[in-house]
Amino acid sequence: MFLHNATGTSVAVSGRLPYRPAALNPSTILTMLVAPSLLSANFGQLDAEIEMLNTSEADWYHLDVMDGVFVPNISFGFPVMEAIAKIARRPLDVHLMTVAPEKYVERVARLGAKVMNVHYEACTHLHRTLQEIRAAGMQTAVTLNPHTPVEVLCDVLEDVDVAMLMGVNPGFGGQKFIPHTLAKTERLRRFIDANGLATQIEIDGGVNRETAPQLLAAGADILVAGSAVFKAADPQAEISHYKHLA
Image (cartoon, rainbow, N blue to C red):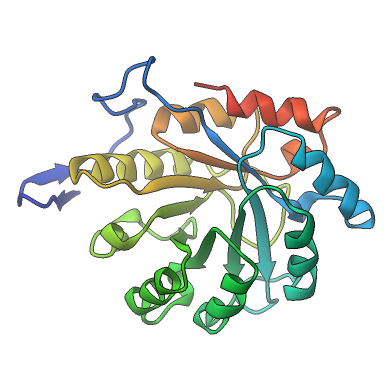
């Protein structure tokens, strides 16, 4: 399959090539951003879990909000996120796995969130929602479920700060990584680079010590790690491992 870049040139976006953009070399590659998912934290000791993250090399805190409608599970809502925001010392990456996420733009902004992440599949008017998120002072992020091709983003990607690909079907933590995510990451990376965009690629689901290096090679910028971090013997060391993959 081909997409057209800003100059009208056709850009191949199919196939799998383990690469980083040619313009980058080992001396200029930035370190991977790591966003531990609090969905996998021990909610009975949430204060302690966040304090552990506050002294780690984590870059963002990833908050998975599930409504039991868009995904078959319910996680947590604004009261929990407000409590987290009061003690978190890293930016919040709020991932809404909900129907009608546009209804919550202002409330997410009031949390002080850095990123508001909505699902392509949940937004009837995605471009409008992205504009509202940016107007509220947050970075825009769009997530694609495993069955959704990256090509659906070609007409809005210039308005997207972070494009997130689900490495599992959303709704539950601890699932096995879907290998096809690597091919999707590579296709998306090619299109971003061919168009000179600054969009970052984030991966959520199935991230572990085996898949993380593959995702880095495919072009990912940000890894969401839940079970891999919070079930590790030393969560801070696990975060550091992903942080320094490059």
